[in-house]
Length: 464
Image (cartoon, rainbow, N blue to C red; front, side, top):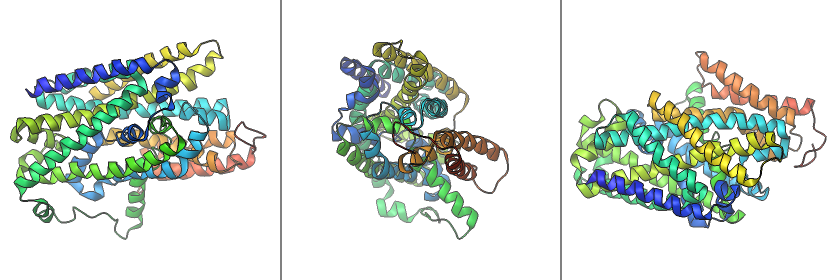
């Protein structure tokens, strides 16, 4: 019954993708749903940006090991990203009428920076997509007993297919449906387990000491580490194509801004449910928290929950993960076709050609991520690494490009390259501080110094 329900759900998702494909006529339709999403679709799409494997599997397992302090990165950092994007970025970027985030670097700094930015954006998604595929592989492993790598391959085929045919339209519509299932499924499971545990008060009273510690101790290194955890998604996902494409798909600038705030509140609220559920699991069935904590929730549900609860839970899990995976696959494909291939084509290709290139790029990136997912299985690490790449290379050029008129193309190039190089070198050393801290600071200094020494005369965005 459970397996049949999962198969039906996957088929329905594919059918939605087919239906959405009727709305796709141009590359703009495929990448940004024609910039026509109403508030409820835009908000649900943004909510679903990260509500996937790292929230349900990764964050809940980290929470069991280290409490709230261990999950600052996600969900708190993720919610911070949406708030900051709504406050400082959504309005400015929406009014520039861009197709991809790479277009901002082209308009503001020129084609060379566009190319380098595209090269840095694209690889950051491979690990992120892989993390989602690993999660779906884990689900199929628990439900059917198939090997995780086989589940990864099956999941990749399904998600890639409906993304290939429907693009952002398919993602947005399925995100709304999936968001409803996510919230409903997790609420039912939380209420069921809470009742078995003696109520919310009992569950929260019986937690281990330090579980709800949120602030760092009075130690310089710990404070810096705490701030770095906020920054991984809080700042690192601001220069991210998947966030950009979901916000820019809104039907107006006001919708774009409001959807950021609505999604942030919804994300932070709903993300508490997996954490609470994990506490119930540890209290009721502690044997499931031994070994791989990522499997604690699905294993417990499969053994102890009723069939309706199982269907709701695994349906919500698949919903969360598929919605995140689909946009993560589309993001690098859009950058690759629009900001790497299009400049090289030099107007020799039509929009239909670029639409085809974007669709086949979806297949390519999904294939590479599938291979990575078969080789690595730590979801939380895969997600964190992908966001750090964006933070140390693109965050500073994006912020100063928007808010500092003297920012130059040479400064932006230096910021991107030195940030990545510093992060790579620092990550090989045994530093007391996270490597992203010196990398981001070096990127900032390089941007400022490079812009002051090598000034641009004029850009399409304004004078420098």
